[in-house]
Image (cartoon, rainbow over all chains, first blue to last red):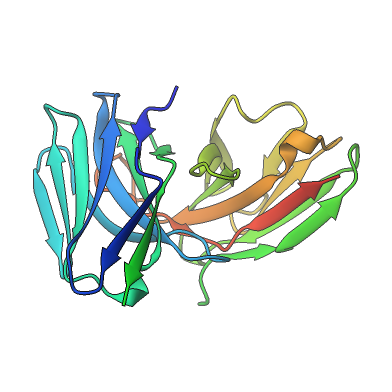
Length: 112
Length: 118
């Protein structure tokens, strides 16, 4: 039962353009959503998070949007840089729960 | 502090053997987590500790798996009688929490221990 879904396994974007990574979830009890980035041979590193009471959170080039009615969130990276090439995981946490449920990841490639 | 350390980084073993992984979290972090990641999947939760107490275990953690955090610092994850299906990356993460479930509780992950069972 995949409660967090990232339907695009890969995405290629030109350097300088906007990268949009999408994530859908099915569990309405999720109250926090996080994005992690992973480089090869390294562990996932935290990028940005959003609480279910908000619809947008911004941190520099990274913005996360949450649409609770659609159970959908997206990560926008603008402008995209070559160092952004990595696998991006969407994760969600349930109310009163310490467990993070991850999606399967999207491999982002920034084309110079 | 150099972050979350995991050892060994790679382990190749034969089916039926026991393996143990060690995780050293960030020193001021009171919570420690184990996740497992297989090819093409995201990390899956296995268990977590607050200090030395193991507070939650996933049903993925069969009887062959045991995790400890004896003094609330480093943790070990042991897999007994390994099976080929145990081949995966085992990720450790830590965080600092002061009661309650508010906030995002950002986890800092180690680089992982890759297990290959032949």
